[in-house]
Image (cartoon, rainbow, N blue to C red):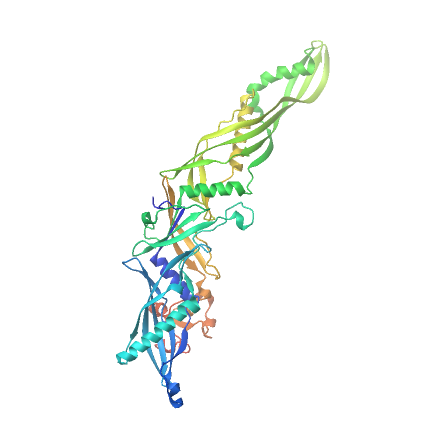
Length: 524
């Protein structure tokens, strides 16, 4: 069992994590950090104290990158440019790389993977020494940057999201209030291999699962989300007990029967109607003008049971109770003559109720229904009923055309008003919290076996242009790259704007740096 006995198994690929690191960098999660380190030397003359300060400023040249190691740990590599100020004003720059061990977590409140940097460990700091500095100087600079990075991560950034919101807590057709939202527990995270990590989640107080049985089912996609069948039953039971979706309905209707469709039984009715109307004393020419029915039903649904089968088949069973009533009317015109034709009488039009029937509390068993698990347009996991064989035991003696019509109508009302079978709330939110960045999820697969549903998806993003620090002009006559705040960037026609979060990516795409805002990347 891929979900390893847990209600929900959420898995994300390292590629998606690094995509979110780029998003974080683009929206300003990793700003430049700076400070001053005072050398711990005592009894320094006042005239030399200013030389004891080492100023530093570190900017990230590119977004941090996450790497899953062979020993199943998570490492964050940070590359940046470090500018030092020493001896009261001398500046020099060095490239720097930090290797930081971090612990991924699954946030039960947001349902997102994230890193809490409070437990980050700076494993290595390496300066690219282009000045041939003495080893003791390099070691001291490394020490300073290590301390600075630790403070930067734990005090300024504190955490970073690694995924979209993987699933919601609110279900459809529910009243407001937190008590009507799913509750989750655990959130244990395990790195499975060199490219995928997983979070085990349980719902509604359930405790269970075997962390050692978790396996990778992402298939190389960004996200895998597995929902155990037992978890589905818990969700459905919770939903059924609280839902605002009607569990009983009253439907009424009328129907005009076409005359040709009722010819077969009209001969049987005519003599009966005439006998009532004339007591058999007259000759009657009898013309049927109209036949119609008024009918209705009170339909009450009970909670269904379902069972997942291989090949995405869901067996469904349950029962429905109904009170059903029917009245059938005939409007007819008679031309009569009394005393066997001796005296003629004018036409007369009348209406008679030929059937008035009702039955209460009939039980309609659903035993052979089937469905499939599907993801609707709100990304919720539901059961779509594909085959519903309903037998309605109406104990009425009626002409077949009328009985068949009423039974078919009742079946239609049952199908139209049947409460949904809700298995799981919406998966993969379309919005990254606290931003205008939109998540575009492409569902790649939905696999069903007897124990679980397994979803895989890939993630794209849009609206990054609201944050990207670089704007390019893709007009072939320009092909110029600007900083976002550059006056010339604002003059680019919207149709020609291309947004970049990384300078290197924009330059690799063939854009030339603006002579005003990016002169060092301007080739003329």
